[in-house]
Length: 450
Image (cartoon, rainbow, N blue to C red; front, side):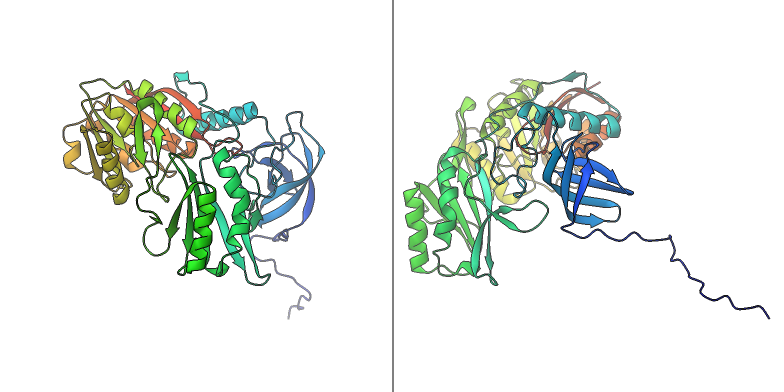
């Protein structure tokens, strides 16, 4: 009889599991390089650290925000050895507010980072480089944001109302009294907003606040319970003082308190006025938006006798300027309310050569009536998940030129693979600096049929 083996320890499948790193732990790190989203990358004891606010070559103390397997997310708490590129953060809330993650980089270095991100995605995923790189489209690095959503939450335990922006790496709210990236007309509203909201009788029923500056200034309040007459009076007095429209969002769609008031924005180079309602998609950077539209028209080179397709048309940001130059614009959008708004915008600007249709553009293009005649050129401006199903059928529409406006280089690169397969070549590409102080990259690419 064999002698029993005592004290034998069995290992679980996969060997030893490393202990998880607790949130809040501080760790000294040497940053090797920058990730595509602008975070510093460090390696320690088999783990990869992604550190907000760190630059390549720096030695920093980082606080853990979260850990998943061998990946640790952290933020910079202290810099022991700074990069020559580092500048003092212009905002007092840097490192806590999650909005502007690369403001410690000079603006020209931010542009270079975004250019590298776009080039890397096109090269790695699609295996292509444009025949020509366009210079970055950029504007002022501060005071550019004309729309902002302000987080509002009642802390029942502390019995106080939190008003501000979401913190980096968490759902916490950072109290904000000044935001350097907001356009100037919204600055005084932002600074006085918390005190006004704290005066309302049911703070626990408040949702977010949306601020907008266009042809008029607007303040929208999301509320989950009816407002009292006294609360409505406080809100109206606040908006009157700031010469702003008051919009309320309870049940149903957002509505202005004064239905006679108009809200929208201008595309000045084309003498166009577009109606807008809080909740609609709109580019937050007015200056770069106008430059983007102008560049899209230049690259697409629309001719007077052509029929052009605008996909993901929104309020008509591209469709209306295009309509001034071509025989006909067919514009398609997935959201029915936006289709109606775009059609109204065309009519109010006396543009009668536009047709607007609703279609689910996440699905393959079917034999829609509007697609049967074909198009000379196509412009598309999809959301972050791109337009893969749409681009699979673009060659069948007969378009020789295609301008793709992207808010995600990864999906632009993925869709480029399909466009190249269909016989298009990447003629030109460049970044659009729609969100300075962030690592968010927007881009434009011109494709031409071979």
